[in-house]
Length: 164
Image: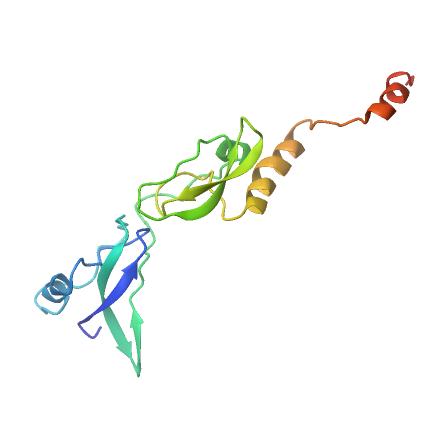
C-alpha cells in the first residue's frame, strides 16, 4: 500500500472501515505507520451518500482503489427467498438520500409499479426493471397457482353448454 489518500464518491451501500469523511481523517489514520491501515475483517458499514476519502495502492503507473465492498463473514448466506414471499413485501424506499427508479410488486393491484429507491436498505421487493418484477412476481405466481382464464363473451355459450 502506498499510504496515500484519494477522493472518491461513495454511494452509501456496502462500505467498509476504509472510508473517511475528510482528507485529514484519512491521512491521520493511514499515513501514520504506527496505526494499522487494514479495515476489520467481515465488517460492513452503511452510510449516507457523501464524498469519501479512501487510501489507494499504486501498482506500476496506475492507481487502483482498495475494494470498497467486503464479504460479511460473520453472517451466513441469506436463505433462498421464494418469489411469492418477496413479492408480498411492502415497498420500502430505503434510508439513503438517492432517488433511483425501481419497480416493486403491489399485491393489491397485482401489478409492478415504479418507485424511487434511496440506494440502501429496503427489502427484496425491489427490481431494476419492470420486466424483472413481472418475471419474478407475476409469471412465477401464475405458474405456482391457478391463473385466471379469460373467456370471450362470444365463446361463453359454447364452453358452458359443452358436455365433458
